[in-house]
Image (cartoon, rainbow, N blue to C red):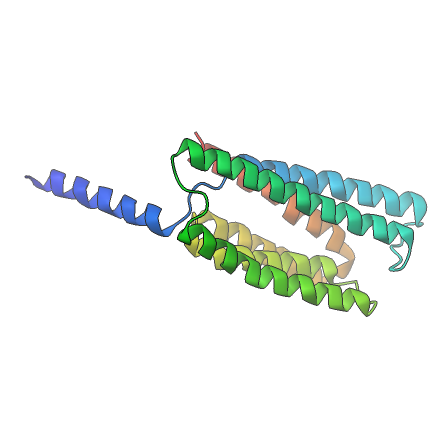
Length: 201
Protein backbone atom coordinates (compact mmCIF):
# COMPACT_ATOMS: atom_id res chain seq x y z
CA UNK A 1 0.00 0.00 0.00
CA UNK A 2 1.59 3.32 -1.11
CA UNK A 3 1.28 6.76 0.40
CA UNK A 4 -1.71 7.64 -1.81
CA UNK A 5 -3.70 4.75 -0.34
CA UNK A 6 -2.79 5.81 3.20
CA UNK A 7 -3.88 9.39 2.48
CA UNK A 8 -7.14 8.11 0.97
CA UNK A 9 -7.82 5.96 4.04
CA UNK A 10 -7.02 8.83 6.38
CA UNK A 11 -9.36 11.08 4.39
CA UNK A 12 -12.18 8.52 4.61
CA UNK A 13 -11.67 8.09 8.36
CA UNK A 14 -11.68 11.85 8.84
CA UNK A 15 -14.88 12.11 6.80
CA UNK A 16 -16.57 9.40 8.88
CA UNK A 17 -15.52 11.07 12.13
CA UNK A 18 -16.81 14.40 10.88
CA UNK A 19 -20.18 12.89 9.93
CA UNK A 20 -20.51 11.18 13.30
CA UNK A 21 -19.74 14.33 15.29
CA UNK A 22 -21.58 16.90 13.16
CA UNK A 23 -25.13 17.12 11.85
CA UNK A 24 -24.57 18.06 8.21
CA UNK A 25 -28.09 17.65 6.79
CA UNK A 26 -29.27 21.22 7.37
CA UNK A 27 -31.13 22.46 4.29
CA UNK A 28 -29.88 25.52 2.44
CA UNK A 29 -33.30 26.00 0.86
CA UNK A 30 -34.86 26.34 4.31
CA UNK A 31 -32.49 29.25 4.99
CA UNK A 32 -33.56 30.98 1.78
CA UNK A 33 -37.24 30.50 2.60
CA UNK A 34 -36.73 31.69 6.20
CA UNK A 35 -35.15 34.86 4.83
CA UNK A 36 -38.10 35.38 2.50
CA UNK A 37 -40.57 34.88 5.36
CA UNK A 38 -38.67 37.47 7.42
CA UNK A 39 -38.72 40.02 4.59
CA UNK A 40 -42.43 39.49 3.97
CA UNK A 41 -43.11 39.79 7.70
CA UNK A 42 -41.02 42.94 8.07
CA UNK A 43 -42.69 44.51 5.02
CA UNK A 44 -46.13 43.80 6.53
CA UNK A 45 -45.07 45.23 9.91
CA UNK A 46 -43.66 48.34 8.19
CA UNK A 47 -46.93 48.80 6.31
CA UNK A 48 -48.96 48.43 9.50
CA UNK A 49 -46.91 50.93 11.49
CA UNK A 50 -46.84 53.54 8.76
CA UNK A 51 -50.51 53.28 7.83
CA UNK A 52 -52.15 52.77 11.19
CA UNK A 53 -49.75 54.10 13.80
CA UNK A 54 -48.34 57.28 12.18
CA UNK A 55 -44.91 55.70 11.93
CA UNK A 56 -44.65 55.15 15.70
CA UNK A 57 -44.88 51.67 17.24
CA UNK A 58 -46.85 51.99 20.49
CA UNK A 59 -46.21 49.14 22.92
CA UNK A 60 -49.77 48.53 24.05
CA UNK A 61 -51.56 49.20 20.76
CA UNK A 62 -53.22 46.69 18.45
CA UNK A 63 -50.59 47.44 15.78
CA UNK A 64 -47.88 46.26 18.17
CA UNK A 65 -49.84 43.06 18.89
CA UNK A 66 -50.18 42.40 15.17
CA UNK A 67 -46.45 42.97 14.74
CA UNK A 68 -45.75 40.43 17.50
CA UNK A 69 -48.14 37.97 15.83
CA UNK A 70 -46.34 38.51 12.51
CA UNK A 71 -43.00 37.86 14.21
CA UNK A 72 -44.36 34.66 15.76
CA UNK A 73 -45.73 33.47 12.40
CA UNK A 74 -42.36 34.14 10.72
CA UNK A 75 -40.63 32.06 13.43
CA UNK A 76 -43.19 29.22 13.17
CA UNK A 77 -43.06 29.05 9.37
CA UNK A 78 -39.24 29.15 9.44
CA UNK A 79 -39.01 26.35 12.03
CA UNK A 80 -41.56 24.11 10.28
CA UNK A 81 -39.90 24.66 6.89
CA UNK A 82 -36.46 23.96 8.36
CA UNK A 83 -37.59 20.75 10.04
CA UNK A 84 -39.42 19.44 6.95
CA UNK A 85 -36.63 20.22 4.45
CA UNK A 86 -33.86 19.05 6.78
CA UNK A 87 -35.72 15.77 7.43
CA UNK A 88 -36.18 15.29 3.69
CA UNK A 89 -32.48 15.92 3.06
CA UNK A 90 -31.43 13.58 5.88
CA UNK A 91 -33.60 10.77 4.48
CA UNK A 92 -32.10 11.33 1.05
CA UNK A 93 -28.62 11.04 2.59
CA UNK A 94 -29.75 7.99 4.59
CA UNK A 95 -28.87 9.80 7.83
CA UNK A 96 -30.83 9.75 11.08
CA UNK A 97 -32.51 13.10 11.74
CA UNK A 98 -32.77 12.70 15.51
CA UNK A 99 -29.56 11.31 16.98
CA UNK A 100 -27.08 12.27 19.69
CA UNK A 101 -25.42 14.87 17.45
CA UNK A 102 -28.64 16.59 16.39
CA UNK A 103 -29.80 16.57 20.03
CA UNK A 104 -26.61 18.33 21.11
CA UNK A 105 -27.04 20.79 18.24
CA UNK A 106 -30.61 21.65 19.30
CA UNK A 107 -29.69 21.97 22.99
CA UNK A 108 -26.71 24.24 22.28
CA UNK A 109 -28.85 26.32 19.92
CA UNK A 110 -31.78 26.68 22.33
CA UNK A 111 -29.84 27.66 25.47
CA UNK A 112 -28.83 31.17 24.23
CA UNK A 113 -32.00 31.53 22.14
CA UNK A 114 -34.46 30.77 24.96
CA UNK A 115 -32.44 32.87 27.42
CA UNK A 116 -32.49 35.78 24.99
CA UNK A 117 -36.19 35.31 24.25
CA UNK A 118 -37.09 35.41 27.95
CA UNK A 119 -34.93 38.48 28.50
CA UNK A 120 -36.59 40.27 25.57
CA UNK A 121 -40.04 39.43 26.95
CA UNK A 122 -39.00 40.85 30.33
CA UNK A 123 -37.84 44.18 28.91
CA UNK A 124 -40.92 44.41 26.69
CA UNK A 125 -43.13 43.94 29.75
CA UNK A 126 -41.26 46.87 31.31
CA UNK A 127 -42.02 49.08 28.33
CA UNK A 128 -38.42 49.05 27.07
CA UNK A 129 -38.61 47.92 23.48
CA UNK A 130 -36.04 50.14 21.76
CA UNK A 131 -33.34 47.44 21.96
CA UNK A 132 -35.57 44.43 21.21
CA UNK A 133 -34.50 44.10 17.56
CA UNK A 134 -30.81 44.35 18.45
CA UNK A 135 -31.17 41.78 21.22
CA UNK A 136 -32.93 39.35 18.89
CA UNK A 137 -30.02 39.55 16.47
CA UNK A 138 -27.39 39.20 19.20
CA UNK A 139 -28.92 36.21 20.97
CA UNK A 140 -29.78 34.50 17.68
CA UNK A 141 -26.20 35.01 16.52
CA UNK A 142 -24.84 33.58 19.77
CA UNK A 143 -27.17 30.59 19.39
CA UNK A 144 -25.83 29.92 15.88
CA UNK A 145 -22.22 30.23 17.03
CA UNK A 146 -22.87 27.93 20.00
CA UNK A 147 -24.53 25.29 17.80
CA UNK A 148 -22.02 25.48 14.95
CA UNK A 149 -19.62 23.00 16.58
CA UNK A 150 -22.25 20.30 16.00
CA UNK A 151 -23.05 21.24 12.42
CA UNK A 152 -21.40 22.68 9.32
CA UNK A 153 -18.86 25.32 10.30
CA UNK A 154 -20.34 27.92 7.94
CA UNK A 155 -23.16 28.54 10.41
CA UNK A 156 -20.82 30.35 12.78
CA UNK A 157 -20.11 33.04 10.18
CA UNK A 158 -23.83 33.77 9.89
CA UNK A 159 -23.83 33.95 13.70
CA UNK A 160 -20.97 36.47 13.76
CA UNK A 161 -22.77 38.65 11.23
CA UNK A 162 -25.97 38.58 13.29
CA UNK A 163 -24.07 39.58 16.45
CA UNK A 164 -22.34 42.44 14.63
CA UNK A 165 -25.64 43.69 13.21
CA UNK A 166 -27.16 43.45 16.69
CA UNK A 167 -24.35 45.48 18.23
CA UNK A 168 -24.75 48.13 15.53
CA UNK A 169 -28.47 48.14 16.32
CA UNK A 170 -27.69 48.64 20.02
CA UNK A 171 -25.57 51.69 19.13
CA UNK A 172 -28.09 52.97 16.58
CA UNK A 173 -31.52 51.83 17.86
CA UNK A 174 -33.27 53.95 15.24
CA UNK A 175 -32.01 51.53 12.60
CA UNK A 176 -33.08 48.42 14.52
CA UNK A 177 -35.91 47.54 12.14
CA UNK A 178 -33.71 47.73 9.05
CA UNK A 179 -30.88 45.82 10.69
CA UNK A 180 -33.37 43.13 11.78
CA UNK A 181 -34.61 42.90 8.19
CA UNK A 182 -31.04 42.58 6.91
CA UNK A 183 -30.03 39.99 9.52
CA UNK A 184 -33.06 37.73 9.48
CA UNK A 185 -34.06 38.42 5.88
CA UNK A 186 -31.24 39.21 3.47
CA UNK A 187 -28.45 37.40 5.35
CA UNK A 188 -30.55 34.23 5.60
CA UNK A 189 -31.18 34.32 1.85
CA UNK A 190 -27.47 34.84 1.11
CA UNK A 191 -26.41 32.14 3.60
CA UNK A 192 -29.09 29.70 2.42
CA UNK A 193 -28.06 30.21 -1.22
CA UNK A 194 -24.42 29.57 -0.28
CA UNK A 195 -25.39 26.39 1.57
CA UNK A 196 -27.61 25.31 -1.31
CA UNK A 197 -24.77 25.42 -3.82
CA UNK A 198 -22.09 24.13 -1.45
CA UNK A 199 -23.89 21.22 0.25
CA UNK A 200 -27.21 20.57 -1.49
CA UNK A 201 -26.02 20.01 -5.05
